[in-house]
Image 1 (cartoon, helix red, strand yellow):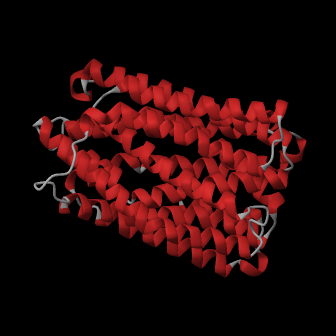
Image 2 (cartoon, rainbow, N blue to C red):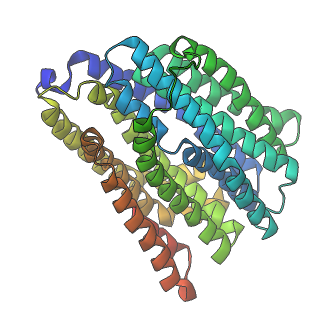
Length: 400
């Protein structure tokens, strides 16, 4: 392997550091799954996972591609004051998008509640969910700035504190209070609010106050909209996957599907960790001639890693399910292989997508995601009379 073409020791050390920290931070999520699945019914676990996923997807919709816009235009500037201007302009766009999208998200949650799909959620907790969305949007903005300005310590600290606090709250609710959907959502909001304050403090040196020369950057908006459409379609696809399980089957199968999906997410975390340190390096060195070699090497590494992960989780999926849950979830083992295969191919797409990002031909993202979304809806409609969880998982796998 040509180490110089691959980015040298700086790239390898960044990938290793970011990768290990990402795995460590995400491990809290699986500890939370471990305790939730063992202390809630399959149905209630499926519901709380659905709600937290909805909050996460809503934050992606609100961000609407601005994280990619920062990544692209931040590294394009060479003067620090211009970098600050890009970041501050993007923050303004973030805030405007929060104002625009939150009423729409509230309406979606209200309609789900009205259809009794989220019957246990009262109005106060809908508000907590919306406030959590705002918090996650701001946290993501701050972490994007820290990631592409190579402030590794602050980035890792935010991720670690956020995951560990939520984990400790779950332990507290199990042992000293009442573990239910309402309490989980309430404390989830409180934790994210604290992280927002710390995150803003971490990037305050990159922010400038608006003045007469402070204008909204049209390039950020145009570039962000293209990726925002991709994020919107992707989020709708992930939302409808779970909604179809809940609508055509029941909350029990939503719990089964959610736990099987967690094993796929383990594979996703591992592959994402490999790429985590590479992406900032790639975007900050776009003008260098060896990027094509770098891109090909990363594609080979991630492809090999993906096949290893598919083989590993196919052999160990049942044991991981029993560890994370219990015998009530054992049916999830039948869905591990197609989910992991689909997610591996989804992560492999990140390599060529970096080339598309560099070329600013973002419309290819939109076209491909739109085709996948139409396929998902069409396939579900075609099989609706004979649908079961195997059919839904197969469609989702092919859609990835």
